[in-house]
Length: 119
Image (spheres, rainbow, N blue to C red):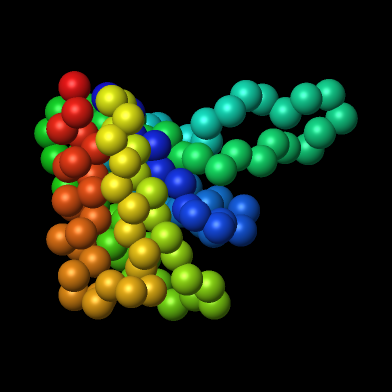
């Protein structure tokens, strides 16, 4: 099962930071990447506005939720709005600037589980 994670109003650097952050989780190693193709001739890279996270069985959903909570909680210059979309098209959005830090983990877990419950 795949979940799509994007950042509303994202600067490309934030999405790259999130990809790098999630890729450092042992349970998510090799399961996180940008949606899109390879760079074209003469291009150094490509811009994508969506990360794809492949979740298998086990605790990958909990690991993703915990890792997203930690990343959202990092100090940054801009506000972050996460959008999680499940394979059936269900979408949950979180506006991190309007959420108390102690509620972020529960909301992200809810978003991830809502996206993963669609068959």
